[in-house]
Amino acid sequence: MSLTSRLLACAVLALPAALSGETVPYRIGAAFSDCVDCPDMVVVPPGRFVMGSTQEERTKLGAMAIFDRMESPRHPVSIAYKFAVARYSVTFAQWDACVADGGCDGYQPDDAGWGRGRRPVINVDFANANAFVAWLKAKTGQPYRLLSEAEWEHAGRAGTTGWWYFGNAITPDNANYAKNRDRTAPVGSYPPNAFGLYDMTGNTAQWVQDCYHNGYEGAPADGSPWLKDADCAVRNVRGGGWDLQAWSVRIAQRIGDPIAIKNTHLGFRVARDLPQ
Image 1 (cartoon, rainbow, N blue to C red):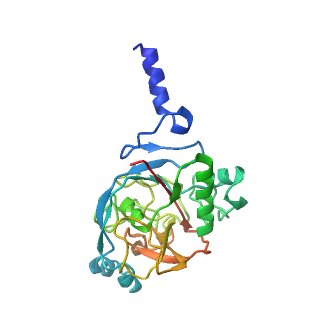
Image 2 (cartoon, rainbow, N blue to C red):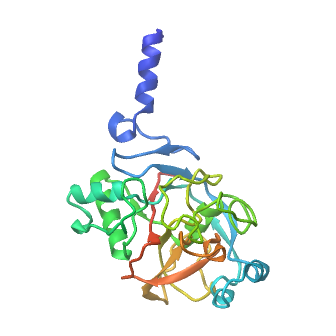
Image 3 (spheres, rainbow, N blue to C red):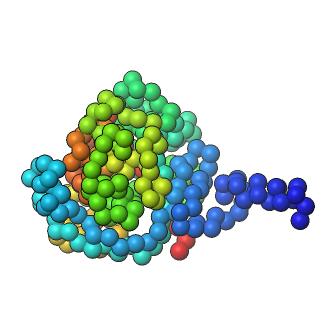
């Protein structure tokens, strides 16, 4: 093959699937995007982990007593499938592209005067997050969705067992939390975890599919969303935000929010099912 032919072949391989017409191999760790305005997605591997937190973790970090119940009992979860997770939380640029394309119910979230672009979208409730997912599905024909809570913790831990994915200590160099920036940061401002995912700790918390349960008794162990026997007017939120203390941005930390709540530290990221 000539040098010119090899260069042309490489250029085609570098194109997103939606542009090249080729099938994405969906290799573990591979990144792809289904359209110009779509989130960058990363292929997350199957895996096993222990979901929840220890008493030592909660006590040493001064977590409120409610989380003794919320994050217990610790239990093994086995996710037998690979799936794709957005590299970043959904940004204002992506949300605004959805609105410009006639999606997201035309809703324009307030950016609190901090700017839009690559900052994570804020002031979005559970229905808003699902409206963005619906637009992505219609635009690409692909099975986008929110993560389940177990998928989120698997993706957030990225094979680690510490209180955060970078260990048992946190500093302002690791994440945006405790008002150390006094606002959200552009996505990707801090180091990613081992799966290549950014801001799984701090910056903005993230809606997940699961309905609220005040403990883990009876929780699914296969990565599926927990939707039964619960208050689904409240959905779980993971990851913590820019204005929350260190104990609130742990990987195991979980809390329920009313589905209509909107604030400056709550956003979301998306997932996508893959051929296995």
